[in-house]
Image (cartoon, rainbow, N blue to C red; front, side, top):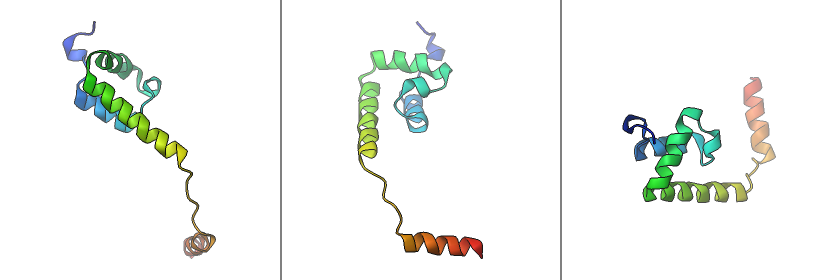
Length: 81
């Protein structure tokens, strides 16, 4: 078991979720084990993870909107000036 000073707090877990998303394998290596240990023991951490997974699924399911051609043209014209 990790030493208490190595344990991840809920606040740190939230920060890591915001920065790195729900796939723990993409988090910095030094944060992965503490996050997994927190998930084993914290209902709040599991709830936060499930909530963010739901948000990610909704975002993935919604296709990105394209800007209208006239707007893209206007922006490109302004860049060239």
